[in-house]
Image (cartoon, rainbow, N blue to C red):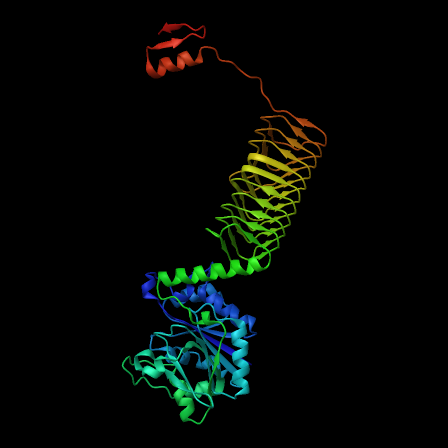
Length: 471
């Protein structure tokens, strides 16, 4: 069985943050998650994560998904892989992939193709490489007629070697049994007193084993982040790469300012994405929608021809031909059926909204089930919380909820119920009824004069007849 060891123990001091570097995010996901998903997509699912600085944060993020091993001292890449020897010994019959947890753009195709070369050439170790126009600073791959002879670092390279553009990505395939053996032969006899994984190349050759290299067509596998500037560059590249894929699939962008679409998002052809729109966490968007400007969609499913204008929507679903906005907040567990219209300054939470219902403006609908073709008037509030627990409201089909209606949950309004403006509903209303709650209006004459006298003393106050009287 093939295994993977992902090195995720780096601190990243230049990031100036108290967290492991592989947990910094690219397009909303930790770099470590990008590397893990590449392994999973390449059908390598037996994974050990090497943690180090703030290793408990790695454990918390993984939440038991994969095995971890602790590198308590930072003594080089070879030393990091040594911490996985117990994991490797569980099954020595296959191959082991070693990857860097802060190089997010490794891809499944590169992993699979490198493994084919590794097996075909019967290599003990196969270095995954890439060719760069400017290879300065990277270890050069020195090829031979039968494989490679080693990796030469920039500081040790002669002029001919510096001209080589093929560089080490920091990713490798090993025969697992050979990796265990080679790790036992690495020494720290160098200026840094560290154990380097690159030494396995020369050790394999000196042991009469094959060492080879696979050059990926994806030069981006080299890219990592040493500081915040590098991290921004990774995000910029990933952002535009995702947008380009959607462009090829028929999605329209008038411009890309402020647009962030996470890589797990699916968008149908003909949909238009306007500036300032952020789409996250596996959202699925239908065809011919119009999203934005200044809209956030997180973990939502949208039908076709949905129009969201300045909306924040989370963990919810919307049917075809829904129009929402501006300034609408859709909170989790909300379902909006087809043809519904939600207007400005409306908040929905944990509610089901039926077909062709209209909630035009200035309303709060929480923990409610609203039927088809309902009109919800301005200022309507479902009073769903009594200070101890949440309760639900139900509104039947074809109802008309007057302005400034308060529905004190739990209440159920039947079919085609009307509520008069200003009504507070505290009990169930039967089908086809009108609910009116208007007490007798009381007019307290002279109240203002008495109030002002008590507040500010003697002054000139109008008497209502266009005259003033002195108090």
